[in-house]
Length: 286
Ligand SMILES: CC(C)(COP(=O)(O)OP(=O)(O)OC[C@H]1O[C@@H](n2cnc3c(N)ncnc32)[C@H](O)[C@@H]1OP(=O)(O)O)[C@@H](O)C(=O)NCCC(=O)NCCS
Image (cartoon, rainbow, N blue to C red; front, top):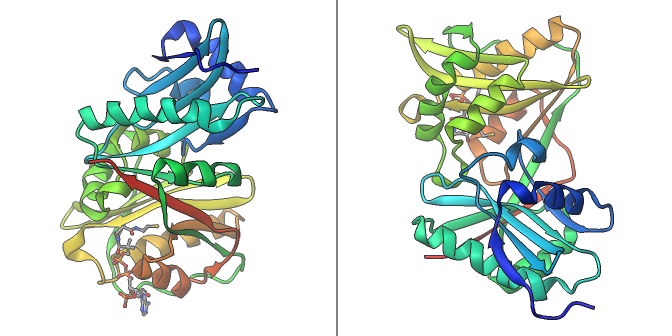
């Protein structure tokens, strides 16, 4: 039986074992969306906001978000002990995280719903559904259509992740931008990282990782002033051709339902909509 006498405190290294035990306990109510990171490494980063609800020596719940980027942030983790009523502990945990983000000048917090149990509780906290993230797949051996333009595509590695970050932050809206840490991790985990160059200047990039027998396009972006000219298509065409030559013929990519330019591009290069779709919710806190 949980009494309301618990306290909320920020995460510290000495709570690592308790946090991991709660998250790994199969009975706990868990929402986890860490993109390219694994929980054990992610919690070691000093600037990640994490709050814990303790009742004496009992860890009742955890809430954690991303490092703010362009006045936005993501709700990355909620873990609640199985026998508690979620609102009892989730509401004060959320209040601590929200206060932290307000002080950090964050005005919008997003969440990708990786599990259905959390939706009713997020609604109570003020989050609302915005759109779906759709998955598109390509599973044919035929080569991709030729790109519309000829442009130099070159392979790169993590030492140039910062050049990709500049393109990424210019191309994506605040909520969808990557930070330096995330882009470096994505590049390290990737099997293909290429730039499109005009006059030796990087103007677009893509990152693809191979998961089993599937090549997952995790990032594609072109500088805003140069979009619509075939640069994204050239990056995509080169990447697909490269994986087909390595014997990989399954491809996947996620994009926003409303991102029509990217969907048209992927469909043109042979991707078809798959399922399931993941709901994207957000809340404004300013
Ligand atoms: C999505 C993005 C990477 C596409 O790059 P791009 O250089 O603009 O893409 P392209 O010019 O090659 O292709 C885009 C368009 O050309 C079309 N197209 C591409 N190749 C084509 C071809 N060979 N023949 C005819 N049409 C073609 C696409 O269907 C699309 O149609 P539209 O512009 O008429 O709407 C770019 O718009 C971007 O950076 N957007 C912001 C970041 C983003 O959303 N990234 C993807 C998230 S998953």
